[in-house]
Image (cartoon, rainbow over all chains, first blue to last red; front, side, top):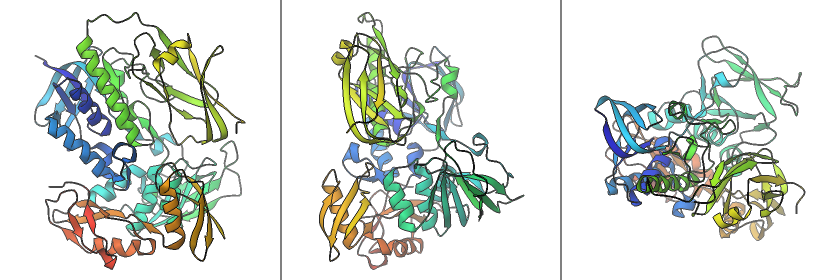
Length: 423
Length: 116
């Protein structure tokens, strides 16, 4: 017989913890967090550098400290959490199959579910790098876990492909641990990471950042011996004659993150092709009723503070779904939020303007670097918001907050777009 | 002399323009807040950085640590070396001092994760 609970939270990282805490504080006490690792905290446990929490706590914390604040709140409230518990599937009617050493294989039926599984790094197999397949190639996050949590240094002579923040952070981390980081190669003409990380992780240690460059060959039969880096043209095609050989024993890949949605698929949830995360409405509810999503499983964030904020909203909305079930709402009036010029995607995809009562956050990423532009929200008949920006970059998430009344006044679908040539 | 730099005070990464005279910042522009001004002033006279690393514990697992405050930039490797030559006995709590006065900087290195 299935165990029954009010709310199941899948994942005990920053999103899962913030969601569970906020659902609990909204009156749903019967909550369980399922976490497959041996402890709460998720990826923050290996992010030992500082820079987290300026928005949430008004001070700069390291990853474990930021996680620690939330772990303390989970424990204070006595919220149940099961570590070492791997959720294998979620049915559309919210039956969760979970396996753990302590309790074996079992089914838990929940009234609502919050997905907070986070994301995974794009591995070599997804990058189509030519060359041999020797030992010594790691994703930056794997190397981070090895160095910071296990105490192993993967190698001494390092090349990094991709300038995402984890790659930049690992360039510094490997250097501090005594490795020699020879270069960071980035396919795009701009970095995928924060500017501050270019300064404090690369410039401080004299590590070159090669923009518009990529790895075009990998050499080494058993162990990595070296990589070839070539310059690329504006179509990302390697330019013949620009090849440079770098001897190295380690190649780290920091080439993007993909939301981890295998479980969402088992629940029949519709996935957005741009984010690789669930399509969500303004309450962060997915296409399956009563299943909500937040954090990096929904779309990849730049700052954990925004994950916590979003997850708290998912928690409030899940609690509200449980307490208001069966109660009559206004007849829904669904409008779509459409990504327009220069905008890759938006979260949410839809808003129920008849029932929305909280401020609506429209979060998105831009397609390119735009200098002197404006973010426009509106449709053919009405302009709702026009926000001037000195610069927008794909590595940073944009967040537009809009009052539900204002959205209602648009009278239909709205588009979020970037208008160039401002300022 | 004019120096251009990027503030590392928060993820915004403001692009600062600093007028420097005799190794001192006389004017800072491009900053959004006071953190940027302070960063520019320190950066042109005596740059400092927070250091985060791990210290070995008696269980053989590393424990994450950070410097209590920023240390002079040219002492980063000395601080790391001091941490690497020390160890902690478990259990430790967030805020415990792992190494006091690391490498003579006057800055303590403190534990950032409760570890049993």
